[in-house]
Image (tube, rainbow, N blue to C red):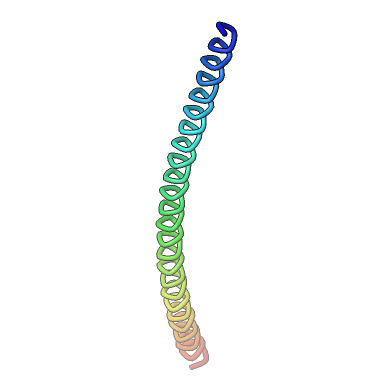
Length: 88
């Protein structure tokens, strides 16, 4: 009888321990899911910032190209005027 009580107490202790371990694992999984969600939000924000930076870089590139085209056209005009003055 005493051994039956000991076995019952041991079985109850094991069941409680297994239940606690399961609860701890579930808590850890919820924490992990929250961290993953936070990381996804951070990545999305980073991607938006990258897209905005790329857009700004593209606009700067277009502006630089327009400036270079204007400079080239001005240099051509100066060269033509210089050649005309030399030919007279």
